[in-house]
Image 1 (cartoon, helix red, strand yellow):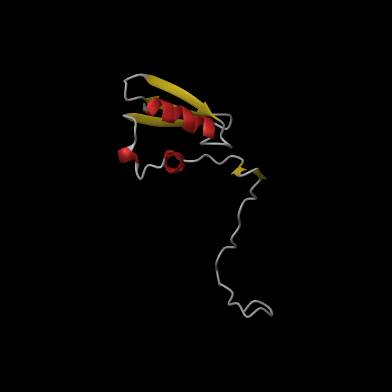
Image 2: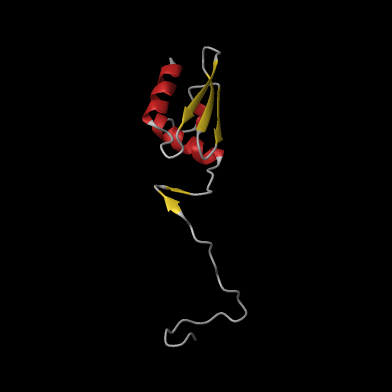
Length: 103
């Protein structure tokens, strides 16, 4: 037992350590979201239940700490690259641009 706490002590277990997390705003420095996480957040803002029902034939992302690039092939066949701020993704500006591309 750990001294005075009534918690059984694990014998032979390595101590659990975690690297400190530095935070600025609502994002962790060095954390890069996966494409699935980006799609999920964008899907919620576009109000589509799954990306099988996405309003575009192709939609992809490239995330950098400075910008999020959104590659869209519109229904009319033209390709567009949109930029967004990582801390605001998906911003109202990005959602408005995607709504305009929907047609």
